Image (cartoon, rainbow, N blue to C red; front, side):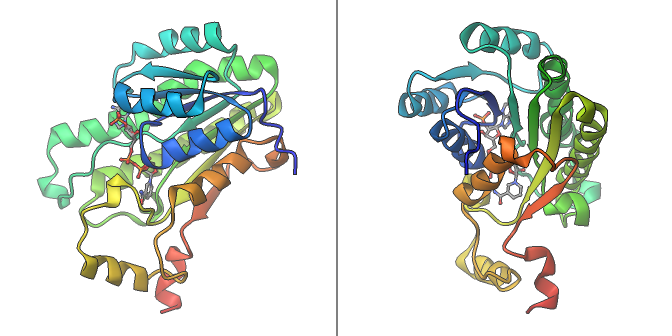
Length: 251
Ligand SMILES: NC(=O)c1ccc[n+]([C@@H]2O[C@H](COP(=O)([O-])OP(=O)(O)OC[C@H]3O[C@@H](n4cnc5c(N)ncnc54)[C@H](OP(=O)(O)O)[C@@H]3O)[C@@H](O)[C@H]2O)c1
């Protein structure tokens, strides 16, 4: 299947590790020019060395509203307008029941997971509309639909992300731009490391496929959604969960 990604310009926000890094690798392997954004410059430089000259490092903190015009200019100067926008950034996890969530944490999660996506999309959608083609994929969470025990801020931000994605899908459909939310289940990354073997075993039991997913398994779905082949998919929430949301029924 020709994905038609070769020669396209992609921006991956949250590319320094985990799922975002796997997506950047996958898009680059399909021949895209990939701009890599996150705060950890060293990790981005290491990825750029791996990917070669058709990638660009953009050290950026998505909580800062002022970064987007400069990011757009840097990508424009290096590769031209952005065709594919992937938003995988998420603030570090700090589990707490609702009354105990610190205001600073709530605001960090909203700024990183939700407001950052809105600002980023707002920076690149007019260009996509002008060229009559674009792909937007954001990384959601099952908690966005189901809520999250001790993860109230994260669940709220991810639910909001779905609202923004579906709004983009409606507002930009006529301009050839699609927007979709990929919803990972339990994926092995630094984010999910540090859980005891016993807790992991209990989690696996609630997953029909009986294992965590890998970043590459999420990247494969995102890459398809970023391709010319996904032209009739928009406003969708695509689970990559091993069936986790069905888990209670299939124990
Ligand atoms: N892993 C899972 O099981 C799972 C499940 C459901 C959903 N997801 C979602 O999938 C996405 C990727 O997950 P992951 O496990 O790969 O997460 P991760 O390991 O926590 O990586 C998060 C990424 O976001 C970047 N980031 C965080 N704060 C930032 C900021 N202020 N400015 C710029 N970049 C920032 C990080 O880079 P720097 O620290 O270098 O800035 C990193 O590249 C996230 O949106 C997450 O919510 C993951």
